[in-house]
Image 1: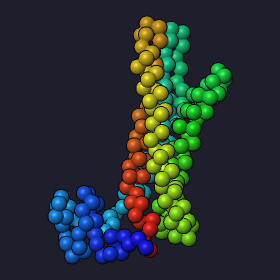
Image 2: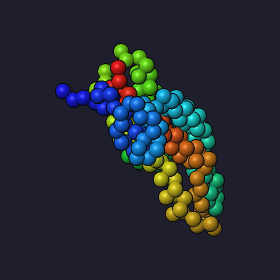
Image 3: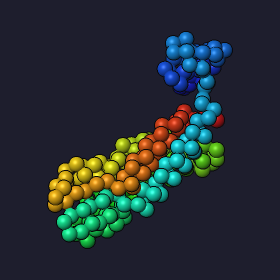
Image 4: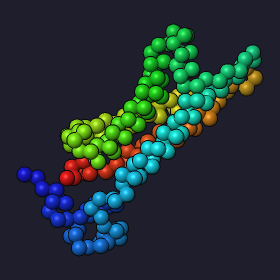
Length: 197
């Protein structure tokens, strides 16, 4: 039978990982205040989650790319860009952009919210399922910035000022902030709380 540090009556420092007796107030290694769990951890998850959701809305309403050529000027939102890619016969790229810009972020919002709620309502999900969901959120998080990278690459490659320019729109900054905030929400989530009674 495996015994956790908490079950053994020990407290691990959340900053450096050093283990101490519960009567010790400060970590002997790094000087941080000792606490078995961050009492504000779930509040931080919800705060970052809400911030990410708030900036995700303008990321979908405003243009991601601003394109200027000699004859025309166009602005493309995320969904508009996906539709244009489909119209030009680039279904594979359109599906990748749709997955990275719509499916993954929305899925992350739902998963993080469900994890936070399931800590309060333990009957929604067992511990193993919660842990698997957290692992999926962590794995998927690294692919969330693909849309911003595509915009950055396009903007840096296409700079023929006399003929055409491609610049990132305000949605690119909003989307990058949304990804950063949801990553912070996932980082603020302490997976050890899944196993707490």
